[in-house]
Length: 426
Image (tube, rainbow, N blue to C red; front, side, top):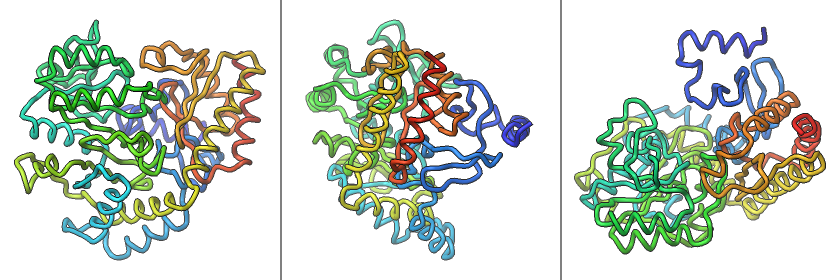
């Protein structure tokens, strides 16, 4: 029995499913999850001492690589001054100023500790600001595990939502509408019938939680126009994409400004930091200025903010995002070429430092298309790559990530492993 096996057996005795977040359990792909002991640069090492090229990157935050020296140093220096105070610190102001400078749509910012907190509060704020209760989300987009968001579509795009998790009351689910991603006609139909009841629309402007799915031309613009016409709040969930795909997030890439934005992952550099912010008139509804309540004992934790600010500083170096995007693109084009030679139906796509792998003849544009990809073939490919020391996300429905620490050698090693892996699944 390996050290990973032993740890997983122990974990299952005291932790539900042996993991503290479901996708870590490997249930989608089968096998034993790897318990990570340490990371450095583009690599992680598991409990058995085996090294992997890491394309999970803590699900996005490790944009500058693991244990980057300046980030570690910032954390160490800050921790020596105290871990938490439950009182304001100068770092909170610095982080808010940094976020507002890089995302001009953020006129006011509130710091929290998780993406779920950020999205949950953004929805509450949209409801409080508009005096309405209905929320619109898109199929395949994940916005944390708040009750209003754990909802899937019924038999048609415009039916009432139904809970996709036990413990979510029908009454809450019934206030959520779920539409197909990239379907402008469905969006128009919903606003035509219910527009005056809609408090807000929340969307991943580039989806990453059903694998990577780009917005179709005109899709985000259409949401912006419909929200403006009906007085609804447009929320960009940039927890994953914020500072991952572009220096100014998807909103900086597209020029489409949301009313509220949620952020996380990269802004903590691997530590638990998240934020929500947007138009002053909306944000002034949050306590202590307004009647919408939100609080958090550890919000704006100084040690976590030190890690986030040090990480963001690195991303501001000239050419950082151009280099990151080039690496992700090179990985995708290289994998496609290897798959083609092996005669395997496979495509890949990337946006900035995010990428998606699909065992399909074309890149999916919706949740339904993602679900029609060859999951069994992905699972076999995943394990072949894992055995070769390449760690991709353990699910056919999750995006992957490159970091500044991935170099030509790591990309070459990945493509070398892929030659045998694609041959094995052909």
